[in-house]
Image (tube, rainbow, N blue to C red; front, side):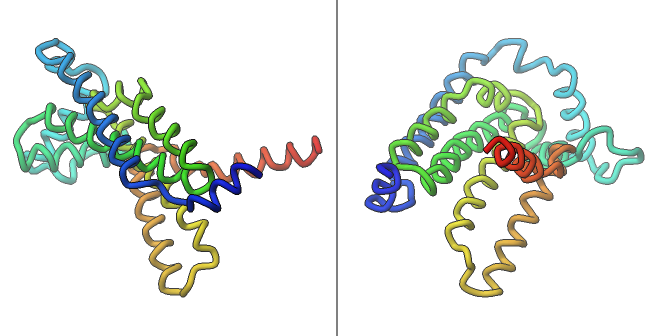
Length: 215
């Protein structure tokens, strides 16, 4: 009840100043971690999936947009690399910088989404935790698809909660736009992570049935 009263008083939104603090905190931590790796073999020697994605992106930048084999992994991340390499040359450092910016945005989106159902203090805490979450920072410094998937998931989380506040939507046209945007984001996430179509809603329904039986 206290949380609901606080939400009613403050409004379900994230203060702009809080959003900026979270964004720059997340970005600063990521850039600091990236600077610490400067000159280390980690930045220069790509192994495993990182090398596979990098080679694939370089081939795409060189003009092999379609390829001649079945995709070994979900293709969106290599095409992202290919686009960056086509515009700026082979620049893994730039890719890491872009992923750091996306990670900082993801922390802000998590805070903004949380503000839709919790107090501003709680949403700010969620954003700070996301900004300082070590696994997210680790993946954003790699040539690896998890960084983009994390950012898209955070954006979907934020938009889904914002959409929930508009129910029912004011017009059919608005509903169509929301559905189209959700479809584009989920489609992009599927092209990043092959298991993305496994809807979390199904798991939530199963959990709901379990709780109902226990009740």
